[in-house]
Figure 1 (cartoon, rainbow, N blue to C red):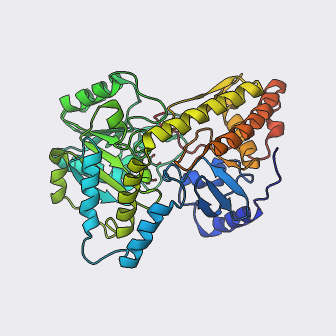
Figure 2 (cartoon, protein in one colour):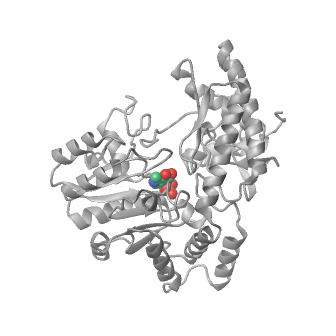
Figure 3 (cartoon, helix red, strand yellow):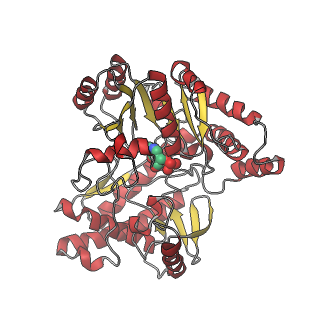
Amino acid sequence: MASTRSVTRSMTLYTKAEKLIPGRTQLISRRSSMFADGINPVYAERAKGARFTDVDGNEYIDWVNAVGAVVLGHADDVVDNAVKKQIDQGSIYTLNSPLEVELAEELVSTIPSAQMVRYTKAGGEACAVAARVARGTTGRDIILFCGYHGWHDWYQSANYLVDPDSGEFPFAGIEPIGVPRVLAGTAIPFSYGNVDMLEDLLKKYDGQVAAVMMEPVRSELPSPGYLENVKALAHRHGALLVFDEVSCGWRLRIGGVQTYTGVTPDMTVIAKAMSNGYPMGAVVGSVEAMEPAGRMFISSSYWSDNIGLAAAITTIRELKRRDSERRFEEIGEKLRRALDGALKNAGLSGACKGLYVNPYVSIDLPDPKLSAKVSTLFIQEMAKRGIHTYMAFKATLAHIDEDIRVTAKAAEEAFSIIKTGLESGTVDRFLECEVKREPFRRQVR
Ligand SMILES: Cc1ncc(COP(=O)(O)O)c(C=O)c1O
């Protein structure tokens, strides 16, 4: 049953934030409008394992997990103890820390295509480093990309290539305000799965393409041969292949999706789950692709702070020690079965789809235009029952069977409400908030 959960304190803070913080949050995905606005909590006070407590004292099972950054579970004791120990020794030194070399060795022995490593603190930043290195190494300017790669100018400039309101990729609805117009045409999107489109672009810009950068996988595996074809095409045209594994890395395979598919890139961008939520990112790659970076101006004070390094070393070793690949499959498949069961019990037509590391609920709709309303209703009803989620679910190793059971029970009740709404044409009547907004659409499902 839905309980009466007040999020008054959250909303008061959110109102205050409007005056103090442009855009109100630092990450677009943390805006209240991305969830059921006014129903989901916006501010949390503490988090442990698979759950967090919001500032109004409500507890939630968390299926967002800091947009995937938390992989072992919130406030993991082993990682946190390693970090606390490091804080006592110094969170950052004047000199370099030996941890920098230790993590590089760990990454090189874990990720198939890694021979050299550069660090950052975030995923988008690491993508910008990869773009710089690719351009510097090849002496070319254009990056062909597919997927989400952060907020930096090199990437956001692609929005000048289309009318933002047209509904076309890459970021329909977001204007590239503040991004230099002169960059238009230096980063060009291609559609996932469309080899012909990529080939046409590589031919059109022959001799100018530095890199093909893409998310190799999100929720669905590529069709057989697709990534092999992309790699062959990129190399035939003298471009480097860069995999952005910021979101898809670590859960499916500790060495990344490339360990799963066997297709290795020249460079890989990693971040998020590599350090269980402590800021850390990296670009890893072949000596050939990365060694020229030593002559490029790529430098920042906090990229080698000791906290991120200690957290990343410990997280990667814990993923290995805790048999994470098998566990994620187990948790993901159990969740999928439980959500499929909930759909069936509610008599709602749909299925839990996607890879077990990022399963998502897909509901069969009489009209695709209802999609945003129905997902908002689902998120709203789940929040009212103490489950913080999108339509897609990202587990941690801390999620246990009871979390799945409680989630499926809540989902069944949410699905019943959606079914009634759809059958009687009254979805709006059940919505207690604005329809959630999708400020950008990812190109990779
Ligand atoms: C594939 C991918 N690349 C880059 C980024 C940007 O990472 P960050 O938000 O840490 O800058 C994200 C974030 O969602 C991502 O999913």
